[in-house]
Image (cartoon, rainbow, N blue to C red; front, side, top):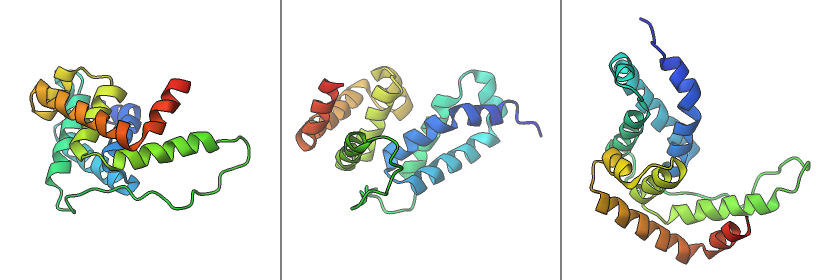
Length: 167
């Protein structure tokens, strides 16, 4: 059995898929499981998918559907570390680390669907209609999730907006 580009796809887009999984689950272990399970399902249909063009939207859709069907606790939660691990003293990363912690805590208050929408809209830079197509919902639903998520983030983490203005 040949992989017809599957290995190359995983090597090229695996890190992006892992980032998405981490953003929507908030846990490295769950993110790895999500990506692995999605890629196992996609590998079985790879030849057909690769023939249709860009398979990444389909892989993301599989990941989203996988999240919906897991038998794990329905509420995925972030558990921020009380104490950050020591980092090499080469550069002062404290401001950047503080921002990452604040972002993780802010994302923890959002629903999984809101995190998925924000990730696809602003990290993957997909249009509202493309996000709606991937999630199988209306453009209005995407707009509502985006609006609600951003409003919630503005309330719980105004510090993130200040950091955005400074950079």
